[in-house]
Amino acid sequence: MSGADSRRNFAGKSLFVALMAAACLLITGILVFLWWVQGAGLAAVHPFLPVMTSYFLGFLIMVMVAGTILLLVTTLLGKDILVTRLLRGLAIRLLLPLIEFLGRMAGIHRDRIRQSFISMNNSLVISQRPRVKHDRVLILLPHCLQLVDCDIKVTGDIGKCARCNRCDISGLAGLAEKYRIHISVVTGGTLARKVIMDKRPKLVIAVACEGDLTTGIRDCYPLPVLGILNERPFGPCVNTSVDTAKIDEALRAIVS
Image 1: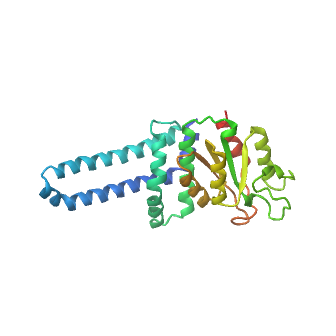
Image 2: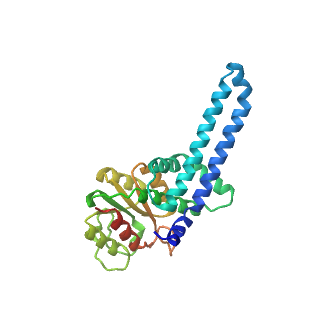
Image 3: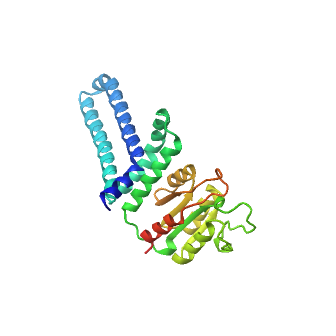
């Protein structure tokens, strides 16, 4: 990857990285404050407790600082660095709610934060250089990709598509045949979870809006999920579209 490509790759994730660093600083500040408030009480219990607490607090701070630095390096280099899976879990499970809260306090739209999070998640997944057999890859598509006036409903079976090329379902059905992978069109999170439980994939490529992708990535962890945002020229949940070239590119990178 060239220097220009690396900078472009980092640009989409910089917001999430900055908010993650702010979240770590906030947590550190809270811990230091609690230690300061409770210092006298701890000393009264045992003279070594304040010292032990200081060591523990220092360890937590080092872990958070090191994690943020590793996240930055992984993003810039696009390479798996030891604890990428752990970092992804930390960002998804622990820090995301706090990061969204800090973003709202700073007046940043929630969708911008989620777009940056999805970009960061994708970077961490790809950095692990996953190679998955075609029958262990699952693509989940929202039903709103299909035109509302289409007489053929492909929910659950994309093979029913008549390939009229009026919507992106046609091209995606072609990708399913090209890579011999399973693609499922779902109507919501409940059906998506059922499909994942039935198919038991090793990697999921999901197309959805910012909110659904963020929720899906969080709910599926530790299962790796690559999120691809749909385009909504007519508003949410109706006649949406997706860049099929992005899905094709992802499949070339992961299907063995």
